[in-house]
Image (tube, rainbow, N blue to C red; front, side, top):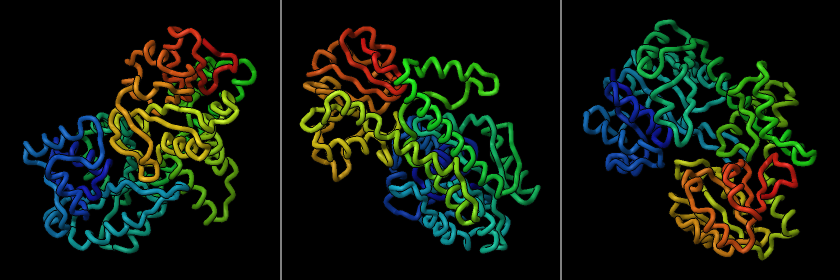
Amino acid sequence: MKVVVLGLWHLGCVTAACCAKFFDVIGLDLDQHTVDQLKAGIPPVFEPELAELIQEGFASHRLLFACDPAIALAGADLLWVTYDTPVDDDDNPDVNPILEGIERCVSFLPDDALVLISSQVPAGTCAMLEGRYPSKRFVYSPENLRLGKAIDTFLHQDRIVLGARRVDDFARVSDLLSNFSSTFQHVSTGSAEMIKHGINSFLALSITFMNEIARICEHVGADAWEVERGLKSEPRIGPKAYLSPGGPFAGGTLARDVVTLNRLAAQAGEELILISAIKNSNDQHKKWSIQKLREEFGSVAGRRVAILGLTYKPNTDTLRRSLAIELCRSLIEEQATLKTYDPVVAAMPADLAHIPITRSLPEAVRGADATVIATEWPQLLKADWQEAVQLMNQPIIVDANGFLRSKLSEFPGVRYRSVGSPRNYET
C-alpha cells in the first residue's frame, strides 16, 4: 500500500507520520520550503511526539517528503487530502487551496487510486468533485484531531466515519485504516461531510450553552462547577457532555463549521434560528475576561496586565485564531500595558511585536495589577504561586477556565475570577 498525503501542516504531518508506522507514505506539499523543512525533520507546527515520529519514519524508510506531484503519485494507491482548511477573521473557510491542490494532483493519479478527503469542506464538495472528475472515486472521512493530543488521537480512534458511494471503496479504505480503529461507520459522502459539521456545531452549541448558564450563576450565588456536575449526572445528558464552564471556543475549528452550516442554509433558503445564534453568543463571551478587569479597575488604561499563555491550546505553538492574542489586542486598544508568558512561543504577531514575551513566570507577573490565565499550560500548575503572588502589585487573577481554581486556597487575599463563580468568591 502506497499512500500520498497532500497538504502538510498539522493534520497532514500527523497523518503522514502515523501512517508511516504501517505502510509506505509520501508527504506531498506544493510549497518547497515546507518540504525542505520536513526533510530536515522540522515540522511546521509543534505537536508533542510529532518530530520523533517523523524521525522514526525516516529510519524505517517508510516516510518520504516531496514537492513534485508527478513523482510522488507514481504508483500511488491512495491520495489522502489533509489540508488544514484556512479561515479568515470571521471564521469563513477558504476551500480554494484544497481544490487547487486536488486539481494539481488528480491527473497524475493511477486509474484505480482513490482520493480520500479529510480536510474540512462544505457538504456537497465530494459530489462536486465527482462531477468535475468523473473517472476518479472520492471518499470522505472527517478528522477529529486535537492540537496537543493529535498523535494519540490518530493512533487510537474510537471510531472512523467513512463516506463513499461504492462498497469496494469502503472495503479498501477500511482495510487501510484498520490499524487505527476497529469500528467503522459507513455512510454516503454527503452524510460524512454533514457529520463533521454536526459534531463541531454541537460541541460549539454545548460550550456556548454552558457559558450562558455560568454567567447567570455569577449573579445568583450558584457555582457553575456544581451545576456542571448536576447536569452531567442526568442520564439524558451524561458525564461526557461538553458542558464545562470557561472561556469561549477559539482556534477557528468549531466556528468554521457553524459558519458553513449557516451559509449552506442561506443558500438553500432555510432559516436557522439556533445555529445562527451560536457564534453571536460565543463572540459576546470573548469579552468576559476584559469585562472582569473593567469591574476591578473601572478602566484598564495604564494598568499592567500579565497574560499567561499565548497559544490557542497547550502543547502547540500555533497562534492561529488564539483567544489570548485577541485579548492582547483588546487590552492594547484600551491602553493597558502588557507582559506575556509562554513556554514555547518565540515571537508575537507583527502588530504586537512590542509586547515582551518571557518564559519566566515570576518575570511575567512582577508588578502586575492583574494576571490573566489565557492558556492551560501544565507549567502553570507546577509553578510556585506563593512567590508569584508576592511579586504582583495586586493579586487579581482572571482565569476563565478555572484552571488554577483548586490551588487558590493556598493564597489568602487573592481576588480570583473564573467563569461561573459567584461574584463574592474570593480567597
